[in-house]
Image (cartoon, rainbow, N blue to C red):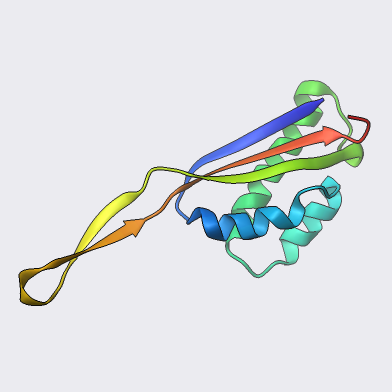
Length: 112
């Protein structure tokens, strides 16, 4: 059985989150949590929260054991981009893109 958890509108670029999410794909949940705990990246905290939520969903909603769960997929998609402007020389403006992301993590028991 495949169980998912999603965090939306995370104020971090998807590229930074994908670097962390790719590290845990295919790993057992306990090992993935240990990897995220010791990563220096700020993105690891947000990915760890979603992983913890996916594990809790599997345990509480589907009566699956956390020891037997594996991270099937970890995806960081683009969210809406906030557009801001900075004044520049000679009356011009410069656009700043503040990117957001949606993180989705799916876990499944080892038999699936």
